[in-house]
Length: 339
Image (cartoon, rainbow, N blue to C red; front, side):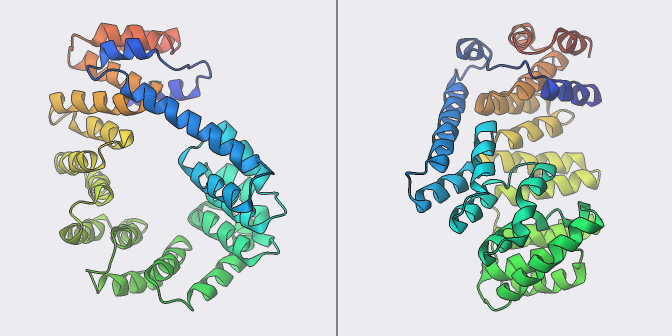
C-alpha cells in the first residue's frame, strides 16, 4: 500500500481533477450513480448555506445557523463565507463562524480564528479558544501564551456548571493542554456512572491514554465503553485504530468492519475497512472500496478502487482505469498499472 499512498498524494495535489461522469460510474459500480447525486446535493447545500451566511438581509439567527451548518460542508465557498463572518460586527455571527471553521487545517484556523482570542465578547473568546485548544500541543510558545488566558477563562466558566457537556469539555481542555493526570480524574468521574456516560466520554478518555502512548489502557477502556455502547460506530473505529497501533491488524479489521456497517454512509470508514481487509479478506476489501467510492465519488477513492481491482485481478480493473484516466495525470495512471 506504500506506493498507493504516494500516488494518492499525487491525486490530492492535482488541481486538474474534475467530477466523474455518473453514467460511467454506474458501469463500474453496480449500484449506479447514487453517490453522484448525493455529491451534487452536498455541493448545492454548501452553496446555499454560503449565500445565506453572507446575506445581510437575513437575520443574525439565520446567518449563524448557516455558518454552523457549513462545518459539515468544507469548501472554498464556505471558507470565504466564514472568513467574512469572522469580521462581522455581530458577536453571534462571529461565534457561529468560529464553529463553521472547525473542519479546516490548523494553519488556516489559526490565521482565521486567533484574532478572536482577544475579542471584546466573552462568548466569542470562548468559542475561539475551544476551536484552537485541541491543537495546543502543536503550537509554538507565543501561540500557546496567547491561548492560555482565554482557555483559563473558559475553564473557570465551565467549572460553575454541572452538566455532562461542560464537565467533558473541561476534561478535554485539561487533556489538550497536557494536564493528563487531571484529565484522567475527571474522565474517571464521568465514567463512574456508565449509564450516564456518553460515547464521547469513553472516546475522549481513551484519547487521554493515546496521548501518553498507552494504547493497551486505551484498548481496555474502549472495550469497556463498548459494553455500554456497542452500536457506536466511532467507538469501534477508535478501537480499530488502537489495534493497528498495537500491530493487531486482524482484530483491527474486525472492528473497522463493525464501524463501517454501523456508520453505513461514512465513506472514510468504508475506505479504511478496505485497507485493513486487504490482507485478511480480499473480497471484503473490494466490496468496501466499492462502497466508499459509491458514497463519495471522490478521485482518491476511485484511485483506491482501481488499485484493489488490479491487485485482485478483478474484471472491472480496465474499466476503472479508463474512468480514472479522465481525471488523473498520465504518470499516475502508468504508475498504477505497474503497481
